[in-house]
Image (tube, rainbow, N blue to C red):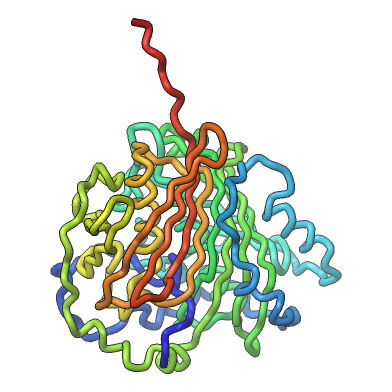
Length: 395
């Protein structure tokens, strides 16, 4: 079957500590059945009414247009809240906090779980508490002042799966895909000095489509605050696939883990904006502004277990590293990151990463990133960051 489905962007089970030899062979596939959700979580509720195809998440993918400040009016979160408030559905009774487990978040270790607990506000609105550590094996600080902005997207990803399982009835062995992702960040609020302070974020679930009593797809829109200060907003649309449907979709590709993937030499860590060579996901190509995707199937965070395709986290990180290398900004602190995913990225075909650097607004740089494989588009992304002010010499 031609692989034209969406690539899972930050939604596959992708973290852990049990690293394997780089690009070795394996015989199992990632995302094995998770344990059943804790008994205190809410049972699935009746369907909410399926939207028409023109209003599904796939047709409302976020556009990588100009950057939008998290503090600007009419945010996606506010629009989602307005729609939720206008719904005639009666809100269920608010219940006590429920703990996020590593199984619900599709993590393999507790230290990789960023959302800590949540409470239901209504049938489609929830409030979470999260912790963003000052140090993490992969989501570590980008300099001596700022936390990694990618932790916002990872938290959104985890919270979306937690709610899909515990509040919307997605079975434990569900495969998740994310069609699109947009994150708007205030880098000045993402400081290492504040890392001990918990993060609270509100979630609105919209475009909810049911499959029986389970979940087919939905959009989650979130607003993150730390000590009352707005840090970020984000939104993404998530789809659910059963193991049987996934096997049909990936027929002929599930044994891809049996063949080793050549590990390409990476670009310098500083150029990519990383501290460690092992975390670089770009390899040199034939001209400036273009790279090849570097796939290290032994990476303990990006490939904690065998996978029949390149995880979406790798592609999103490749976009960030490409934006850093193309812009020359160190650190590259994005105020906006968007991504759209069109197909699975296969392990054994070269994936070409191309960039275009744009100066669309004064004092900002936007880098558009695209990934292509076998002549077909895999993903597109756009990242916008502020250019540091030039210091004029007094001599």
